[in-house]
Image (cartoon, rainbow, N blue to C red; front, side, top):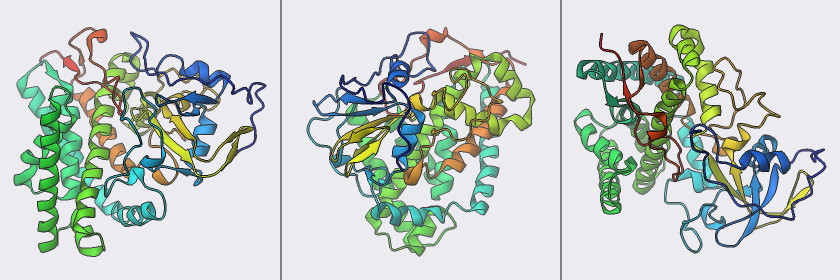
Length: 411
């Protein structure tokens, strides 16, 4: 809901629209794009010119971003928003595909979320935690057998969440190679648009087969539960499966890889995490804040909204920079410093409000297990290329690294 107008003297100075900065400073792979901090300091809620000419808003301050995320007067529907990044689709965006909760508002969103929330039970999370530990150990063993030198994304960061999505959805073991191959192709940089589309179609076809199997034979997993206990159609179940894959794979894979990159650039912090088992939960929250790989989201006002002494008019789009908000010094002292002992409570790495990440607890489990285990198994882990040669995902909705070449001393 709206909060009290800011005491900043320039809070109403929104006459000069800004544009959304996407260029990151060379040599600073963990920092938000250049210029966002300056915008936040001057105008935490600023007028913004969109690539299609729309003049809406850019929110960079923590208070403004969190307020808008929690305000039902702002819509998440794609067809109502203006795309904030250059080179985007021309014309209005299409509505969200079936099952894509990110682009829904209540009550449609409420129906799906209520069904799914009941499936993320304490028992299921406990069982999945055991599997995370097993899968992590298996991949560390494989890395050790192969010997020093690997791409951490391919060997470790991507397969762990991919296999955990299989566990969550109930993908049979015999099908996992097919499932993971499609998922990897969709998420990989070095494929053609035709290959990516073919993988998407193949994954949708497989999800349809999986839903049919769950309808026929009940199984104790999330998709099996939904197939038996809900009124969702087959099309909705297929959409939900695809949504959970997209939401749970790319984000967590990039947090594992980019989190490792950040730790290797802050060796004292890495050593603290390696040697102090109790530090892991707090360290994960700080890495989520510091990196904010899901860096930007967009809302559109459904009615006139007063915020920080400004009026966001009905129909105006607001771009929310989660990464700038998570570096706001008014919320987090010394925000540009990675401090694994920081109490990063309240960070927006998982969003906020009704669209806050549904699988955040599973993501936390994966990160809490995978990052310390990697550092403990390979205490001499280091980059195998200069840091400036690590390829960054600067043009993607989920930030991180395309590849992370690492090596270690053989035992």
